[in-house]
Amino acid sequence: MGLDMNLSAHKYLSGYSFVDAAEREAFEKITDLLGVKADSHSPYLTADVSIAYWRKANAIHGWFVENCQNGVDDCRSAYVKREQLEELRDLCGEVIEEPGQAEELLPVAEGFFFGDNTYGESYFSDIRDTYDMLTRILNDETLKEVDFKYSSSW
Picture 1 (cartoon, rainbow, N blue to C red):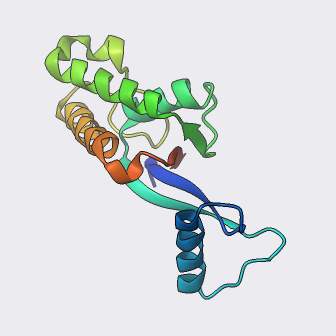
Picture 2 (spheres, rainbow, N blue to C red):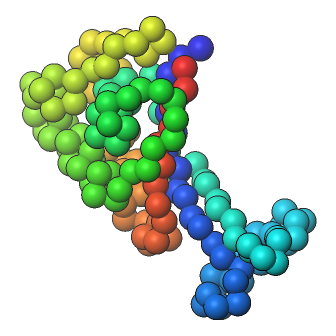
């Protein structure tokens, strides 16, 4: 058991005749791949693809809870704005540059299965990994038109 955390790319696709051809084609490819036929009265789907994963990175989890889940840590998915990911990436960058600011900028979060709550190597490894993951995600052109969702479980 432990704190598992996931960021996913979330995309709504419509098969309605009035949407642009590219969206309709993507919709049809996915439904064909799944071997399902969509209801003609409501032809749409949502796709979620995991794009980042953390394990027991409690400071990162605490940031998502406070900034994207209104302070409620209940293992539900929460939408995350691109600007919020940019903010978290920038905070991680600041902590990397100024490790002495870690407790103020990205404090650890305590929980029964949340792992180490000190500002040691594990903490800074999580911060560096998060900075790298978010930089990759934010620079990925294929992710410019998606929504993001954060979820956790323990």
